[in-house]
Length: 606
Image (cartoon, rainbow, N blue to C red):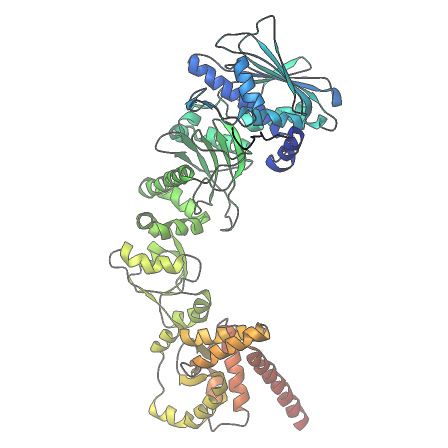
């Protein structure tokens, strides 16, 4: 005899319904989606038995307010008494029996029992009448939220299919109003391949339109351009001007990727409408396409992905990963085809969504090779495409940061250097990779200190006449680990250029972080900074072509030279968009105060 007893879990159905309504489903309105899904499963199973069968769903509303009732009827396969016990008594039971699918490989969207339970969110009793297309008696099933149910065999036979009756429970009459029911039926069932009819107050109407042919064969969409664009506006609420058909290799997932008519933020959430077996599963699917495809909004239909328990999203698994990759490939292939056959169309898309194109080009060199000529970049020759810049047949110098470009663009332009701003996301990577893509392309990363190579040295006489003042200026900035060098360069209006080697930039960042950090962490940063001091220095190039600098160094150093040099240093930092330390900010404030005092002293002297 066994030395232990076995017990069965007892499920509190009322508690389970509370979980469904408050945690699993997003809203009680999904009960209608669940009923439609069950009807879809039943019709699909009936068509497995009879391929010429034409499915239909009929919905009838009666009464008003809290006396409202709703009937939903399908002409699907129906249930036998055994099916009723198996699917409705064992909540969450699989659609398989003894390892085989009960209703065919693609028939069930979800689990029948769990879906029917959602009706308890809006009704205190579910009445179901069903007749199996395989024969047997007609069955009446009545279920209550306390976990009890009754089954009765009907004396007369019904036509094959299933009817579900619901009576509104208190405070849920909103979900039984004709306008709400019509809206939800269209929302969830717009793509179903059979009619959904709604009867209310004796007036009957079809809710969902006849699905167009390109739903089943997305490759036909291009031949129905206006219709597809109108469909996108109706379904997604935006007016689109272009689209790309989507289809996986096995044909079990397809859709339309609508090109967004406005630029979008890279970090914006990408939400798409996805239909499973033509039923809306999610209108907020954010993982059905690759990350780089944020310039499209999609309608996607599939019969191969696995929905989550709430049937409002899909499981992240190998199957979803494959589908996502193949849908991305559809977009990529269409863009490449545009590069060959419709460059005007491609140019319009790129002008609006350049960031997306650059994102794709970074991860796919074949795509980059096809698209590079139309990618726009900011440069010292203006805002031009990469093709236009390459047509200049010059070395493309580029900066790796936006601050470096802002600092150097005026100087580089005056020296006739072609410099491209690589400071925005993806751009430095693309410019670095360009020689691998385009034979003969010459790209070089430009650092601030590189620009100084084109500066003109002073002649012997100028060096001699400015030597004493230059030494004094150098000493004035020694505490900032900055050397002063006199040069001549263009533009004349630029008095000074501050350059910072990478090692010195690292040290500046550490010191600035130390100023803003708690004391313990600042101490660690201080030790790290001390170990780096003396390893490198920044350089302040003073432009002797500039009237201010020329006046400052035209004779022996004055007693005010230090203050003026410090102000030129602070001004060069601001021109280069360098964050300033507290000591440097104090320098700027002190210099302005000195100028005010000198001005006031001068006025008194008059």
